[in-house]
Amino acid sequence: MGQGPRGTRRSPGCGLQRLLWLLLLLSLARGASGEPGTDDVCATCHEHATCQQKEGKRICICNYGFWGNGRTRCVDKDECQFGATVICGNHTSCHNTPGGFYCVCHTGYRATNNKKMFIPNDGTFCADVDECEDSGLCRRGGRCINTPGSFECYCMEGYVAKNGSEPFHPHADATSCTEISCGSPPEVQNAILVGNHSSSQGSVAHYDCEEGFESPGGKITSVCTDSGSWSEITYACAEIAMVIHDVWVFNDTCVRWQRSPERVNSKVTYLIHTERLQPDAVESVYEETINVTTDSKTPEVCLHLQQGANYTVSISAAPPRRSVPASLSFQTAEDGLLEDDGIFNISVFNETCLKLNRHSRQAGSEQMYQVEALGQRWYLENFYHAVSYNFTTRDQAPKLCLDLLPATDYMINITLLRPTELRSAQVTVTTSATEPPLPEVDFFTVRGRLLPSFRLRKAKEINGPISSYQVLVLPLSLQSTFSCDSEGITSFFGNASPADGYVAAEILASDVPDDTLEISIGDRLYYGEYYNAPLKTVNEYCILLRITSEWNKVRRYSCAVMAEVKDSSLTVQQMVGVGLGSVAFVTILAFLSFSAV
Image 1: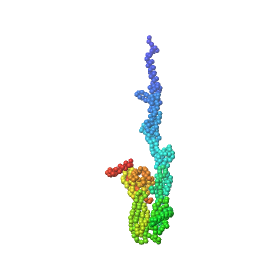
Image 2: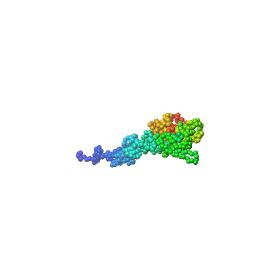
Image 3: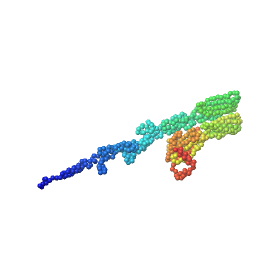
Image 4: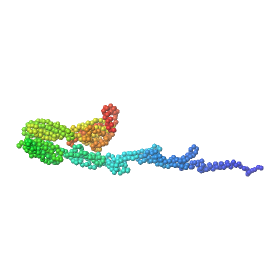
């Protein structure tokens, strides 16, 4: 019964086991060859995703800047959708990129990392660019003002905008700054332009009246304004009233006189009015007026007069010429008697002294005179000054000096009282002005750049008419050497060097109120033709007030120191001194600080 190998039968379990091993080998082989296997998840990741190991598993995650499931979808995130200000900061624009973004500063701003594009993950932000660092940005005459993200151009002082208005932008506008030029100064009737002048802004044209004319209101000037035109001239040259004086009789029937001011080669027509007083009241009064035209400095005329009669001769300039007339009363001699007791000539010397020349048939005879002087001032209403007294003398040419006030017009009448009939002569005298009274100021010292403020008090015109008040700014070093009557000091723009000092303000006397006028030094305003410039911080100054009195084209000055502006640094001793100062001084400083603010 036995069987050989050929008849052996195998168990069915062996075949199944073989099949399982075969499938396992195929699976391993497929994995080793890159076919989907254990790594089939990573192979399915999206192109903008990365396969990462998490918790023992491989998963697909979208790259930074994308969102989705990592396998079938990874969509770009738009970071800029939240706004450039939120993402990039102020003054920026946001630009999205696949998977990211970048920021760019607006025009007029610059990234703090000095790069055109940036991502604000390192604190970079956009800062304003100061375009005005380019000195020539606004071109010649232009002044640059920086603004957030941009700039503006304005014209400097002395320049005006042309082909447009201010402010302007040189890259977008055709506006440019042209130096202000007012051209030739205007003509003033009966005046001439004096000195060198410029046509630029702030230049001042000065005028002097022609001979025989004057400007009663004050100095005639015109300023080149920032509009490119000359300022209006407020004063004018008026003809000076001719004064007739020193009238005397010679050759019994001839009259000679003097005139002032003298005008070379100018003919004047005079009206000679003669009036004869008759001794008999029944007879009529004889009157006659004749014209005499002459350019003589001492005109004279011979009249047809009766002998032994009383006459009054009045002399004046014919209209429209203005004049201050003069008159003389006298008696003609009897037949054959040409000399008679009386005054026939009065001359003036030393301004307030008189010399009388008289005829007398009796040499050394005693005669009594009455002197009456009446003074008036055209610049003061209701002002009168009278001088009257008698004197007796035997001198043929007596001299006398009168106590006259300065800057006053006097009419002086001298009458012979005895031993003959009343006879008189007249003469006019104009006395010179003297220095005006010293300015009334409250002196103070200012330390630092606190703008000193002062009160201008009106001075009394006791020595002559006051024309103006000037504020002078001088380096402190010049205080001891400065001469008050110096006329070389000019305006802030006209001085050669700040070390020479300058006139900061000029106020006409007519513009000063009866009480006070307050001015702050360096307030950048114009006072008259002068610019009140700010004080430089590196210098120490002395501030003076100068009063000017002008009479007959002669100027007189008086000065007073108002303030000293010194360096702000105080030593310990100075600080203690200031702390122990008087209550009044502290009060003044507090007031000045309040005024400056």
